Image (cartoon, rainbow, N blue to C red):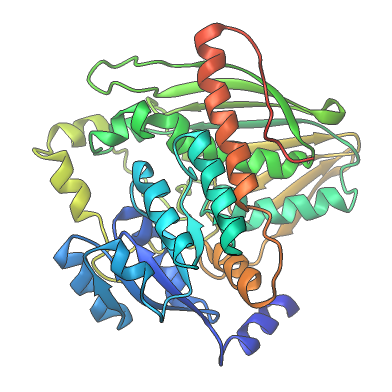
Length: 396
């Protein structure tokens, strides 16, 4: 445990952040182990329409539950709200929390529209509350470590970044909204935002323009973007190429030490997502079953999460991210820097804790979330027009 983590552990015993959660579906199930394990966070309440998920939360966390988000945000015991509802509800639920004077941790993407993101930012400023946008893979321990090593000059000047991932994302059970781009579905708003977030953190300078192509709806039965490739030009001559396919037959985790995106070792047997999907009669019912049922049934990470291959090419050396840390290759060979692991997403709740208890300014604040969202929209626009899209909301 680092000195910073020890400070969090000791100082949080008497004054943990009192967290409420809006939505107990799959997104919350992925974060529940980190919330439960974090010494600076106590989950005190949640809102969820599914009665079984509410009962599970009460049993596992001893928290109050509501059916309506309005009751949650008006609970005086709640000081921050984790918005883990579907993308199309982020604006409504985050705005309710902000107007009730609560800090918010909003699942990516921050909202679907840029106008709604700006509304949340301005509302939070007026209410004097903080916005953090995550979890996203920009919080992952190896990404944070790589940023530190770059800042220390370990690879010299950053020149180029490469990010590539291939999964069967589009053939996992989905709701209708998850297959509608207008409602924030498809790989652009669900997956590209992860890749954009971590690449922006590693670039360390503002993005300027985007040139991109999407896969469109290659499969008419899954009518949304399922793949993309884009070039992001940053200031100071840095550029990054980002490619993702959610149609993949190839498993990109084979290139990541056979570790899943969630930090879980994968079995040797090949699983065909398309065939599994064919065996499911009701996708909506299946999706509901993947919500929170118990801490034991939540994904149990063994390493940090990841988002596929990521390389950072510098003047003096090249960085490769792994689920366990960062490898830097120099002229005389590679050096490995391990990233200490507690639980997946521990860094997300470290950020929430330090933002509220130490008044630290989070990297992934509202403006950061809007900047990544802008690149998602630029990806779609560039693919439609064939032209580069100039960006306006990037931080200096």
